[in-house]
Image (cartoon, rainbow, N blue to C red; front, side, top):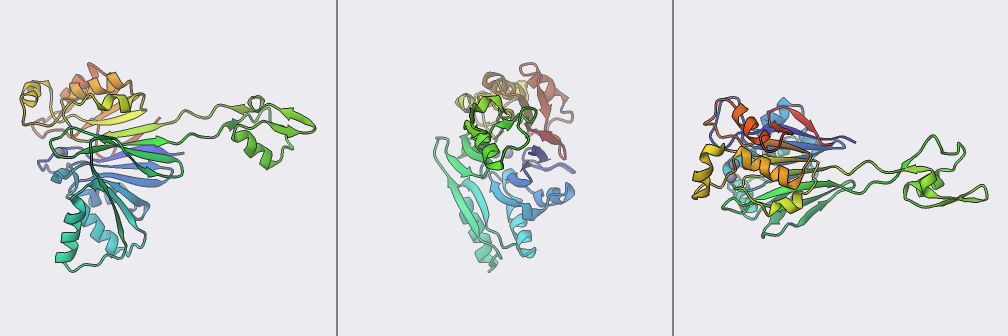
Length: 304
Ligand SMILES: [Zn+2]
Ligand SMILES: [Zn+2]
């Protein structure tokens, strides 16, 4: 089953020609999950061929403009497209009021309903259960309420060992095998493990939004297949961040979170526009966590 992430934007708040603020699309089994929705996200979705109708869940990390200012535009376009299906929005409380103000002042009634799921508190909570996936929040440290999102595959059924499977085995017995049961066939009990193989390992993706270096998330990220972590700055700003006023991470700090959490792969983004060349971010993060890549607009990263 497809499990992949496409970056739609990876700069921080200051506008740049031809670059976009934070937005990502996670595709799981052809269901699209939108993570943050900075300005221009709907155009980026069009550019990379994502149909709006395939998005049913939108996750907004926090209420800084570079993470949600594209949302009203996207919702209005969904209305113009005569969308009927409910859209679920997960965001810190307050975004519901912002959306309602837009609608009320424009006397607009959307063609679909919005199911708003407010996020609050400092504890991780389970916010969505899909057929094959669950989603939980990751509380970040950003000066205002800010959440990352952790997508976990649900436990899978066992694989059938086709080489050993009797040709005439009825389908209900095959399903019983996949569920881990022993079966009774041709007058004998067959132990489950003689005809099955372990399921594929469970894959996980964590979107870690804007944050200072924040060790409490390490426990939750333990062993995650792939994480995105912001890296707004490099180490020359470490002191300035530490002395206050800046709730962002350096590339090295992002790498340190990845190393301590023993994740499979790290994607860094949310780059400050101070930097003309992004290689410095990559070098710095790789010095502590070698399997790091840059978030590049339009690039797709497989979760495995
Ligand atoms: Zn930001
Ligand atoms: Zn922010």
